[in-house]
Length: 238
Image 1: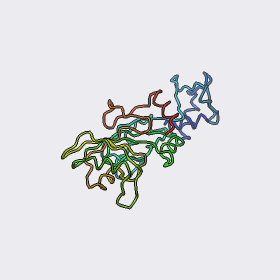
Image 2: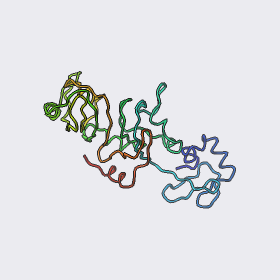
Image 3: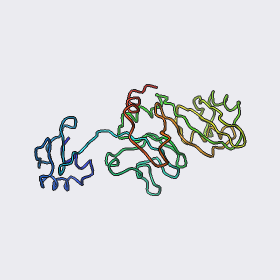
Image 4: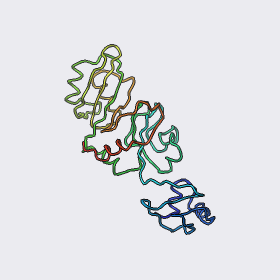
């Protein structure tokens, strides 16, 4: 990668501004001052410093966020705050994006990355990546609902969903459930319960493939995946 591109990607300014930084002689590659913007950097072996500070450049970034309600799963929006708006600039410079979408009022696990190949694998309908949700339901969820979800239910547009694994945690006027599905149609969980005459009043995604939401993350907080989580994710075969 060219040194000017690396510096620009790290947020040190436009290509033009980066050239001024280079001309000042404050950038070194392996202790050698570099002023040529076209100088290439080996990201695996070269050590780059700016004013004596080592610069870390990662090709890919993998973040786990506990998405808060009221924020949309998008990279930009003219009206609403997005999950990318919640990122520190040091992470935003890598131009990551949310892998899939959570509804505006839905909370929970959201993977944010700039690894397009991984995102495609996780979102491909052919892969059937399981996602587990916790929900509170207005109305009593019954064994009949569990059986209906097991065979798939017909949504309001006539689409028959793939089987879902519904577990009743608490049944009553306000039921609590866990639901695992392997597809991601628009408002799918809400529409599945609508199909059996019930309404979702609270929804939170707990898992996606091998990833489990870190319950220590407050709403709106995020962190890098651990090495173990990343290894499981990169090697995941649903």
